[in-house]
Image (cartoon, rainbow, N blue to C red; front, side, top):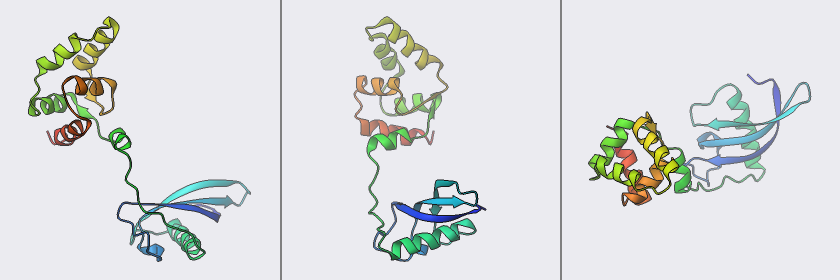
Length: 170
């Protein structure tokens, strides 16, 4: 339990299912950003996630402060989906096995990957790519090798996203 007082609600970051028109904070999902003043006078900016029916302890104090903020004219913004680049950054890694099987299921062969790596003009970059391809235990969606290979193998970014999602199940 935090030993302090909420002095200011800074704002609210909604979740995708948040109804921005809702005025009862106990029915809203999202993240409350606020300032706490501790008994020693120090202040800190904190965040707390609110989920209907799952709030207890300190969250009750946060809900009360957020409700007062909302009643005083605070505005819950409409949820805006993150841009594709941000979503790609958050995609889970694939194991080397999952990545290779995903490529095969998408109609690309491992020899095509090897040919693409062999075609890299800069010797140092080619060797680095070869080491990454042969020895990486996992692959990240936004890793430069993945991005480079996807372009060379004729994938659109959206096709790589779909390959990534389906490969997670392999």
